[in-house]
Length: 83
Image 1 (cartoon, one colour):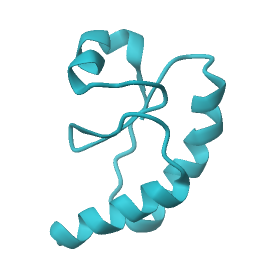
Image 2 (cartoon, helix red, strand yellow; image 1 turned 60 degrees about the horizontal axis):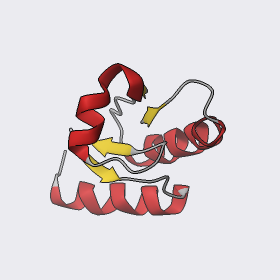
Image 3 (cartoon, helix red, strand yellow; image 1 turned 180 degrees about the vertical axis):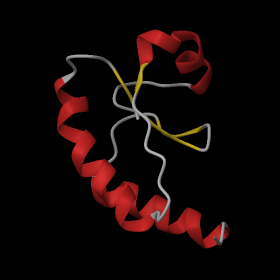
Image 4 (tube, one colour; image 1 turned 90 degrees about the horizontal axis):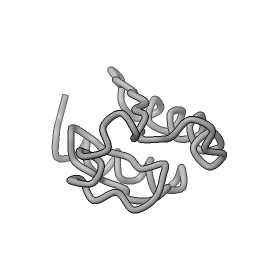
């Protein structure tokens, strides 16, 4: 999850999105990245707002998804990538 320190939307979304991911992905590696530390990479990925979500190095949500949208994307992704 890409965020900035002090971002209220980021803080509000973090726990809900992480819980949704943990419900679907057994060996979840959840990373929180301060976008200011990798600003050029954030621009390359096409981030529009924060928080933004990347999965396996690719931007999946350029803006904050709902937990339901995030969960659905993870389920659909896991169908194509059996563990």
